[in-house]
Length: 110
Length: 117
Image (tube, rainbow over all chains, first blue to last red; front, side, top):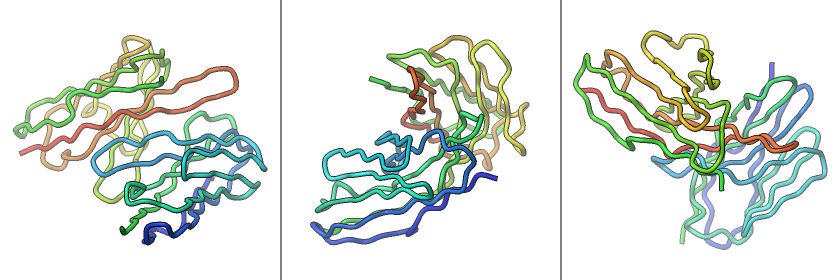
């Protein structure tokens, strides 16, 4: 059974304090790993797709990386507006339906 | 690009009534759309997968007669909550599958907050 585990469940940072969120996965035949950002009361917003180990993608203060077992979402010098829940999802095997992790709730204090 | 809309954004209804939620892909065609339910501080729970022109596939434990899904066109899927009860109150989110070459990505709508009195 495909499994996606995100850690930590919650993370509090001071503005400017860089950190990383983790998404570990156990799947057969990774097709794609997705990162989403979700603000309270809103639908998830697509951030990145990673397809193969070694791949990296960046967007503003966010950088996503991928290995054969996990993905990291690095947040550099975060700002309060980066506060949100970050969701990881994995698409694998013959299914196009992603399996979502439970998310990491990030709070950045000014 | 890849914008998905949902309507309404929130709805309050009386117990026993039915509520319809629309999900539209605005700038792409989506042969597949998904419906999720999300409880406070919890992750997304997939309810059903909707394919254009065919019957929806429901996840285990989701009542197909209560949650009617119609995907009549490549840009529109609807979820009807029939005979709604307070326990159906939740945040409902749709997503649309966008495929292009080797990419295959879900884009989400903004969600619909349903409150059943």
